[in-house]
Length: 324
Image (cartoon, rainbow, N blue to C red):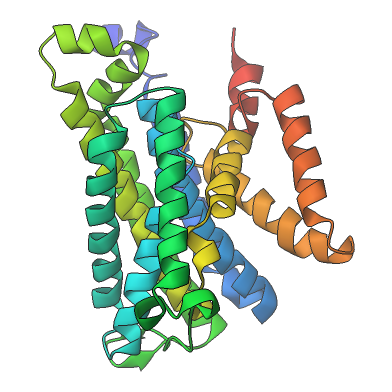
């Protein structure tokens, strides 16, 4: 038995990728956790925005990379979660309860919208999700008594945790980081579960999965609602970090940027969309400030270069190099 275990080549190499991945995840988590200790407050705030936007992109990646449902209105659930959490905080309930309320509100809207959208496919799905996003933005712009209208909800109180007010860049960052990791883990578990296998089967051939007895519409609706709930969590984190929510947070531009982050990073990868989100934030905001407001132009050029040179996304560079 010992000789077989030591001589058979399939026994040892299988563990190496898992160990390397676990080591990389642990090292990355520690590096992110220590970031406020060696970054300036402005850089910490920027990194916090990247985490929020990265979670939004990762939730969209569940639809695009796993289910095969590219959405143009995913920011609707992001905005609903942000407004619900901000409204709750302004009325005395902040912190984790506000985040849970944002997730629940986003999941409810995703359930209503997805009941119609997931029955369609292709261009029709794109148009329906685009309509959901536009309707959500218009509702936020016109429902002044709840959303503050075009001015949005401002002066959102800082989140509190066990009586501690998280009003400093570092404490806000750690608060956002904890829920970012939790949301990313939930998305990862959903994608690698038995349901995730079914979702990939639906992506590849929905007719075949339906013939095997799966209720494909119901499964896609579940994934759509789950992705919407995680987007709502990201929206709640946005309200906690930015202390301001506007109708633009639920609009098409935010949805397009999230989809752009997924494409740049690589669909189906879980760190790729987060990396794409980081590039979008840095190019649009930080680099754009040094280019006299031409951040969108630089972002467009970046998108063209990535699609032309790396059509599968930045996250696939290593895989392409090591392929036999």
